[in-house]
Length: 371
Image (cartoon, rainbow, N blue to C red):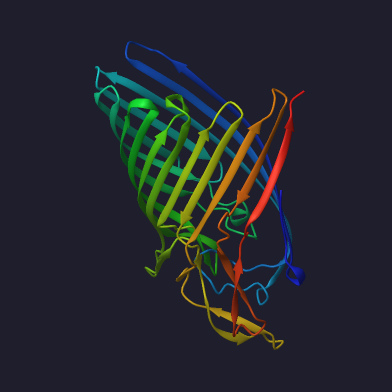
C-alpha cells in the first residue's frame, strides 16, 4: 500500500492486491544441454482513492505544480491479469565454449501486444580460470499502477521496453584473488510523459552505458579479505517529441568502493569501508513567480542540470569474540567527519539556499549473546 499525503493538496491512496503462481523446471534433455522451463500467472487488483490536486507529474517536467492543479475526487479499481512463459538452454560446446539461448513470452490483459523477449549469450574459456563472455537481451516492465488507472491515468499505457548488451572478462588468480571487468550498453523506450488529452502516454526514451571493474580477495587465502570496485557510467532520458535530453535522476558517473576485513586472531577482526560517488543531481531554482493567492512559487531550470559535491566517507569497525557465547563490536561511521551535501534548503522567497548535510561522525556499538 502506498499513501501520499501532502498538506492541503490532499491524499492519494494506492492499494495493490497480487495473486500469483510461478513454476520452474530444470531438465537435461540430451547431452551437453541444461534446459530451464518456467512460467507464471499473475492477477492484480489496484484500488486507487484520490482526493487531491492532481498534476500529471513525471521526471520530465520540473515545473509540474501541485498547488495550482485541478482537484480530482474519485475511487477507481483496475484488474490486470498477466502470464508469461520462458525457456533457456545452456549448451556446452566442447571444452572452451558455452552458448545460451532464451526466450520469454509475456502478455498482459490490458495490452494488445504480446511481449517477445529473446536473450542470447556466449562464454569462451581459453584457460580454466579465464572466461570471456557476451550477451544480448530484450526486457520489458509493466507501467506504473497509478499512471494506468482510469481517470487518474491512461489504461492503455504500455510497458517500458529495453535492449541490453554486455561483454565481460573474469579470471581467478592464486591465493583467493580474482578480478572481473564488464562493459554494458542499454536503450529504453516507452517512459510515460504527461499528455493533455490522455493524461499519460508512452513518449520518452533513454540510454545508459558503463564499465564496471572488480578486484576481490576471498578469506580462504589468508587473514585478509575484501574487494575494490569501480563503476563508470552515464545514463540519460530524452523526450521523444522535442528531443530534449537530460541526465537520469540517479546518474552517478563514478562510484568507488574499497572494502576490507582483517582477521587478526581468533578473537579480534577489523573491517573498513571507504566509499565515493559522484554527487547527486539537482534541478536548481532559477527564478520565482506568484500563485493567485500571492504566495511565491519557484521556477526551476533545466532538469538535473546541477550536480552536488562528490560524496565520500570512511567507516571503521572492530569485532571481538570474547567466548563462544559473547561478542561485541564498535563502529566509527564517517570516521573523518566529512560534510557530505545531501541537497539544498531554500528560503521562503527562494532567493537564498543552504546546504543540507548528511550524517556526520557517529560512534556506535553492540553486544551479542548466543544462547
